[in-house]
Image (tube, rainbow, N blue to C red; front, side, top):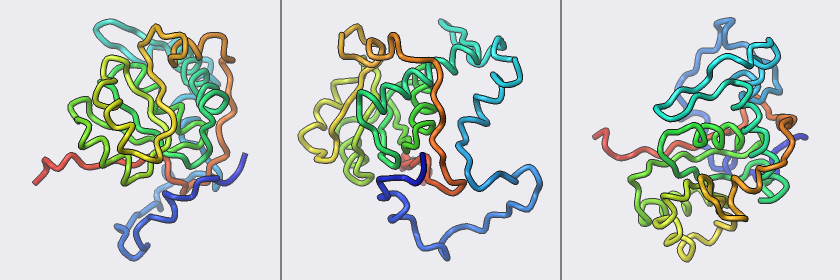
Amino acid sequence: MGEAIDTFARENLPAIELWPEIDLTHSAYHYPDRFNCVTRFLDQWIERGEGHRTALVTPNDRWTYDHLYQQVNRIAHVLVEDYALAPGNRVLLRSANNPMMLATYLAVIRVGGIAVGTMPLLRSTELSDILNKARITHALCDWRLRDELEVCRDHASDLTTIGYFHSTAPDGLDALMDGKPTEYTAFDSAIDDVCLIAFTSGTTG
């Protein structure tokens, strides 16, 4: 546990004088110097004994906080043990909005990685730009959206690992999660560590 090994994101932050003014004086914004935000999003409900409550509802699924917690921790184990994710590595996420997308997002942050969410409509050209600009090393992708991401393999030199979920493949994320522990101690993040990179869609103009 400790500082990020891959320091690319911190080294490429804009100069602090270019940052917006951030007022954190309200007591609601007071956090300890070492803090992994997933513990606030997820772990607190388990610690309160409220894991049975509904966390996610979709037309096809209903996940409790307990189930989400367990899935996030299993994915965390895969990321570190099978995919060799190091703290500070960027992970591209490619999926529609569904429970597994959220679980992968939280798992990446839990292990000290940096989540880079993308839209399903993006094609290989846009994905390649994101992969290269953020020097992304890993990707987690819904199997049904694999085609455009596979095209990027030859155009993104830093991308070493792709894990597919909603897949029946023996080396898919779902299979690797099977049997993994349902507990994972969150990475000891600093309060100002980068945990996500959000590329704009370009439509706001």
